[in-house]
Length: 158
Length: 342
Image (cartoon, rainbow over all chains, first blue to last red; front, side, top):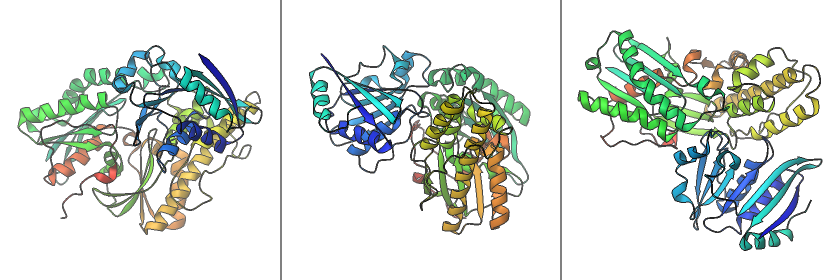
C-alpha cells in the first residue's frame, strides 16, 4: 500500500516545519529516506524533525561524520548522510544494522547504500521549485499512509 | 622526553617524533595522504581509509624513526589520536600505538584530534602562550574556543549546520570542481571579480559567535543555476563565495577577541591554509592590535606532528591513559582534563 503527498516549501521555515510535523508521528524503527540534490533542503528537514523531538539540539550536517545520533525519551534518532559511501556494504562500518527496528533512521543520500539500508517507511523527495522548494512524500504501509493523511490537513500542499 | 605521535583519525596517516628537551622540538615527521585514493568518490571512504592506515603506518613509523636517527627503544612514550574521527580509522593508530607502548614498557596517551590542531601553532618558533582565542576551521569543524591554559578550553561558538570546509567542498561540488574543494575554489577565486556577486555573511547581523554555512551553499547554488552559462561565472561565484566565507570567519574572530579580552588569535585546521582568510585576519590583526598565529601550512591539515606535540605535553606532565583502548567518534573538547599547574 502506498500513498503520496506533495508539499510546497516556500522557505527554510516551511522545510523545518514539515520535519517537525513528521516528528510527532514517529515510532521506534521508522525509516525515512531523504532524496534530493545538494542544497535541496535534506539536512534542514532533518533538523526540523530532530529539534521537534530534542528542543535546542544542535543538528549539524552529518556529511563528514556520516552519522549523528540523538536520544529522545521514546527512541534514538540516527541522522545519516551516506553521500560519501563508495559501496553499500560500507554501511556496516557505521554500526547501523544492530539499530534497525529500534532507532528512527533518517537517511540522506539513501541511494548510496541501496540494498544495505532498510526500505523507507517514508520516502521524501526534495527539489527546487519556482517558488522555493517542493517535497513529495511517499508512504509505504498503512501506518505511514495514515501519517500522510493526517499531515495533509496541516501543511500547504503543492 | 621523546614521544612518537600517530594520527589516523580520517584520511591522512601521520607519524612524528617530538622531543620536549630544551632546544630539541620536532625531530622528524612523515605523512601519507589518501586524497588521491578518495578523489574518485569526492570524499573520504571509511573502510578504504582504515585499510590504507593499516598498510601505511608501520613503514611510516620506520621512516620517521630513521630520519630522527632513533631506534624504537629510544622512545619515552607514544601518543595516538583517540578521537573524534572515524572509529575504524582511529582503532588502527590506537591499537598499534598502545601495543608498541606496552611492548616498550612506556606510557601511552590518547590525544584529542582538535587539541592537536589548536596547539599546532605552539610548535613554531616564538610560540604564543595562553590565554588565546582559537579558530578551528576544517572540513568537519568550525569552532571558536577560549584557551585559558593548555587543556582548559571553553567553547565560544560553533557551526549550527555545515562546517566552513564543508561549504568549500560542497560549493566546489556544485560547480563541478575537483575534491578537495578548498584549494579548487581558492584557485578559481583568484581570477574572479569580487563585485559581480554578493553573498550574505551568515549570522553576522546578530550577536553571538555561532556560525551557519548551509544557507550560503544554497545562495551559491541559486547563483550557479542562474548564471552558469555566462562567461567567468564559475570564477566570479567562487570569488564571491570565498569573500563571504572568509569575511564571516574574520568577523566572528574579532568579536571573540573583543568578548574574551584575549590579545592572541590562533588559527588551525585545513581552512586555515586559505590565503584569503590569512590576508583578512592579518589586516584585522594590524587594525585591532592582536597577535595572529598560524601553524605552517603543512600542519594546518591533519598531521602526526601535532599529535606527538600535544601528547608529549600531557605525558611530560605525568598524564597517561590506562591500558584499555578507547576511541571516540564524538568527543567534546571541553571535557578534557587540564594539565596540572606549573
